[in-house]
Length: 332
Image (cartoon, rainbow, N blue to C red; front, side, top):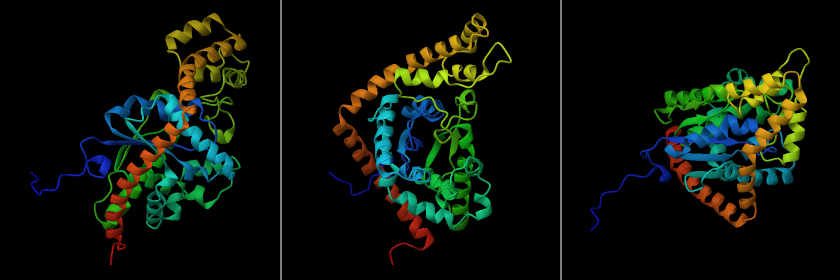
């Protein structure tokens, strides 16, 4: 017999819930690379079952650099396959497309009306990308506030990111504080999850690995593609150990294991690169096989996205109703 007392909302219904929330996302602007895996996906995989976890395909963010619709569609589906191939259990994580939850851009606009232009001008990522020749469009400039909305919309507590993304989490905390100070306590201030040992993954040219810089080793490339990328790692002839090769190799083996390998092959850069390619393939091959299984069952993949959309829309709209009321845009 019903008591008439309303039960509290669960987290998946937009309530506080018992487990803290974890969220991360990657742009579908090209092939995922090993930097994406070690910088965001691996920390997420190691932690996500202990949280109510959200894994986003950040397709709105991709619009800052990707202007070809057919490529964005392809990369979006590929990103979902990559998440599943990397080992995400869709029964334990909410996988969704950013663009299918319109509350993200709505909240981003509200934050943009609270922060200043000089504040956004401090963004390291914006300055770095513009310096690399990427068009300084307004979306790229306002990127931190959309990322803040992605995080704060779900009362996220933990965000796994690379070291280079730490400032974005600081921006999210600042956006939360600005809103809370102006309209009353509404948003939690999130914390970043960074593994110090892999905080900055180097690319094949010795800079930070990035699709924008075209210096990546593809996470789900073929064995041949991975081998080609590894053999293209920039080296110098000033020492016995190719430092760029070694820095990437440390992601796959311990220093003690590498000491033996590099002492035995001093000066033989080609051999060391071949060993690295073999070690990468050993990690990637099982993930590639799992990804292929999902790629051959697209109805299941689309069902996972549909379920993710339904869950996130419900949570996001509950939050936005509170936000709208507080800022004066509630029902009249």
